[in-house]
Length: 118
Image (cartoon, rainbow, N blue to C red; front, side):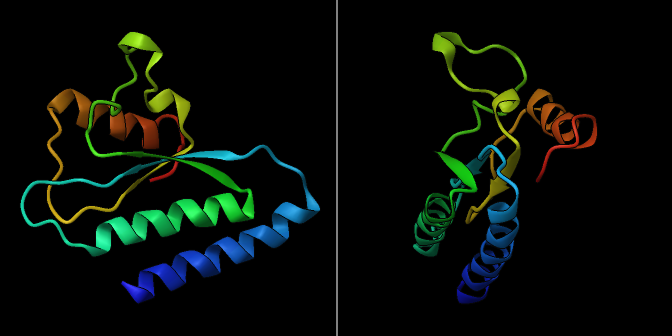
């Protein structure tokens, strides 16, 4: 856990230098932090750290979800966000996420076709 947090911090610090030289809009990061099975307490700590790093560096805004409803490119009810609203998706779970075949295809298209981050 400490290694992952340190890695994220180092990456954020390295990117911050670049961000200071060229003003860029904040990226939109979707963090999925839930899964079936065992729920490790480190998951919530890691997600909070990722959100804090984005806020402190000003490089990204974090949207945290504990479900997979957002893993679609279809318009959702109530103006809910979908994959089209994000630049990258980060999974930090203690188990397997439930995704139907359509959601898996949307996630693959998000990365492969749209060139977004995973």
